[in-house]
Amino acid sequence: QQQVKQSPQSLIVQKGGISIINCAYENTAFDYFPWYQQFPGKGPALLIAIRPDVSEKKEGRFTISFNKSAKQFSLHIMDSQPGDSATYFCAATPYSGAGSYQLTFGKGTKLSVIP
Amino acid sequence: SQTIHQWPATLVQPVGSPLSLECTVEGTSNPNLYWYRQAAGRGLQLLFYSVGIGQISSEVPQNLSASRPQDRQFILSSKKLLLSDSGFYLCAWSTGELFFGEGSRLTVL
Image 1: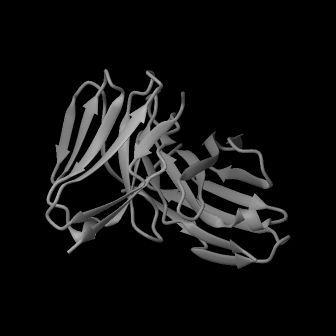
Image 2: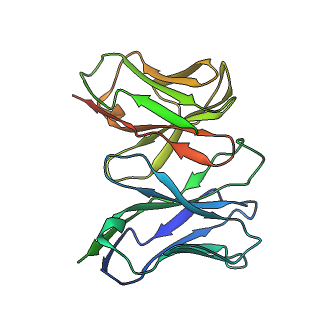
C-alpha cells in the first residue's frame, strides 16, 4: 500500500516532442506529490509538486496532471529538449506537517531526448 | 538561503574497512535529515532519518549506522564495509519540501 508505481522505466523522445511519465499509488492518505529530476552523478532536484486540491499544475514546460479518483498522477514535459535528458522520480507522502514526512519514491524513468 | 554539503564526493574502500560520510546543512534550524542510498540504475532507498539531535530512525537493518551529533550535521558510518554497500549515498534535509545533497559515490572493492 506504500508503493508508488512509475512507468515507463525508460523513454526516448524526439526534440520538440512531449514526454509523459506516469505514476500510480494505492495509499489514499498520500497528500503531496513531488517530482524530482536527477542528472548523472548528481543528487535529485525538486522539479515540481502538487497537492490533490488541484488537478493540474504548470511551471514552464513542466506540467503535473493529477487524477484523485484514479489515484494517478503524471508529468508532462512539453517541447522536450536534449537538456531534459535525465532520470525522473515521482514521489508521494501523507503531508503530516512541516518537515515531518518521508517520501515514497517511484523507481524512476530515464528520459533521453534525441536531436 | 539553505545549502547542503556532503563529503567526500567519491570514495573507494576495501571490503572490511570503516566508512564515514558527513553531511552538513546551512541556513536552516532543526531540519529533518535523511540518508538515502541509490544502487546503480535503481531507485532511492531510505536508510535513516533524524528529527533532532541524537534521534535516529533506521528504515533498513544492515551494517550501516547514522549519528546526529549537532543540529545540522548528519553522519553515516560503518565499522566493516561489504561489497553490497557500494552505491550512491545521498544526504537530504527538509523543513517542508525535501532537498538532496550532491551525493557520495562509494565503491567497495
